[in-house]
Image (cartoon, rainbow, N blue to C red; front, side, top):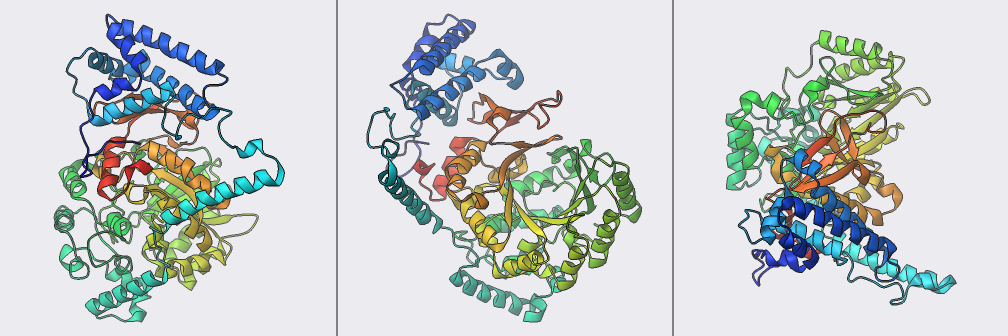
Length: 599
């Protein structure tokens, strides 16, 4: 996306006049209309005529540019429709009409830029390609035959891959030799602080016992910025769950610049806005922060169900450390809460519910992190679930590979293996690596132990600001596959206000899928980008027919309508979602040192 900058790299105010330069026809329609309804009618006439002309075009536009024009025409039709205005409560047509009439309108640069690019696309100058390519223009390998065509195509692909490799070098992994050496020093510094040994370090009980929960302790191990320290103190003061395992702290650089460890720090150290917002709403957090509407999808305590054949059981309500953007931050009271294990009678009632619902073939054990539980409790749960005839797969959701790989002892792995019976019942693990910086030799060793028992491990990444730079997620996918983890889902970050610093526009996630992930071999990009619709479940973002832009808010945020996964089965209400601003996201990337022209 092109945003003008001055010589200092600061963003200029976008002049309203730029809007009309991109498509004078639309400006003419709006200026000459006597009122908004007349403008709506005339604009629909213009768009319909534009659509017909493009559909009948045989020479002027390349087929790819034509596809963009037609899609953009469809988007603007939806935006100016009466139904979109009623659904969103905002009239983009009225704002555009008033702008064209020279009236004062309170809209942001992000709003103007959204329509600048939409109008460009409708006019046939999307900017996605260097220029609109005529069909008979330039050498094209498709016009060649045989070996000559193959060599030209291969050379082109080599050039593209070289560009990718240059970018990937920006993202060292925790498996790089130099990083391993740095972290060995970090570990020794932590061991000295706790007066501990290597044997202690490898004992997950020791790790759990020494989880760092206070800013005063953490700042003795790594340096904190003023905002980091202030945020942690607010979290402590208001009993907001916070904690980091010694192992995970060893993945952080001592210097707080966040040049290399940005994703790791952001994962567990809450931004100041987060701590202030959660503290302010502490008393009503159960209602305020339940984005997915789990109160409305729990047929019985500890169980959540959104789909026909799979349901969730939540026996354990805490983790070894808390991800800042946790979906269930409203349920967890503290890190390693001693009262987190549900009462036996509640668990038995939940298990009885599964017995009474034979449609359920798969159970996801989550929480909290169920692998924080003792081996005995884990085996109890697996044993009970394995006696339910309709349960064919038990999926365990855990981040232990990432935050505490020492947890995968021989005994735990043997327990998991005991209930994994080929052809009868599968035990699968869903984990949550966010960044290639988190993948370490210790994590790979734990993964290897589990994989050698024949169990599959799947990764569910959340697409946040911290892993959203060009090819940043590609680096993670590539290393995960080599380590034995299959990419499974990439979630759009939940639309929660308290985690606004983490959120990324849906358009960027789709761009990542089409322009970055698509360049990888198929086995590396097996993950599916999804948006979790509250109360209903996952919407596959690649299925463009399942979501559409309804409006652009004055502050530049897109408003989407999401259709539920069961839309072809029965009538279920759609969901309206307000995204984050693309313009504001690009400004954040610019501050991080990115060239926004690359996006």
